[in-house]
Image (cartoon, rainbow, N blue to C red; front, side, top):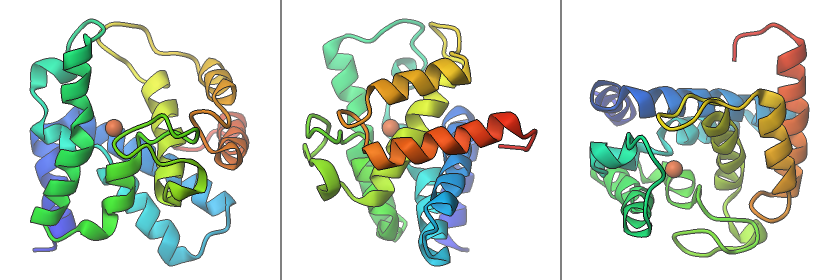
Length: 188
Ligand SMILES: [Fe+2]
C-alpha cells in the first residue's frame, strides 16, 4: 500500500485530534500556495507535508498532548521532540521527501526557533508556510485549557509576529487568504 496513505491512516486511528489539525493546516496551505501561484507539484507537496507536519506527536505521551494546563519547561522540551520523532517516522515509512515541513515547522524567522535555529529564508519554504497555517489553526481551535480565539484575533496575533516568528511575506498572504475565506462562505 502507498506509504503516505498508510501513515495518514495510522495517524487517523491513533491520534484523531492531531490528524484533524493536520487536515486543517493542509487546507490553509493549499490556499496559501494557490495565492503564491506555486507550481502545481510544489503545491501538492507542501499540502501533503502540512498534513503530516505533526506526525511525530504519535511518539509524544498522550498526557502531555492533552494536558489541561500550561506545560513546564521539561514537558515542553518533551513535546518539542515531536519534530525529530516525526522525521524518524518519515524515514521509517520512506517519506523523507516531506521532511522540510515536519522537521522545521517550529523554526522562527528570527532564528530563535527549533530544532536547528534556522533563520529567514534558510528555513525551507514549506516550513515557513506550515508555521503560519499551524499557528492560525492552533489559536482558533479548541484546546483543553482555554477557549478558541476568533479568526480576527488570531490574525492580529500572527500579524504581531510578522518578521519575528513568521516570514513576513507568508503572513501577508495568510491575511488575504483568511480574509477571503471569512468573507466567502466556503469550506476550509
Ligand atoms: Fe508541531
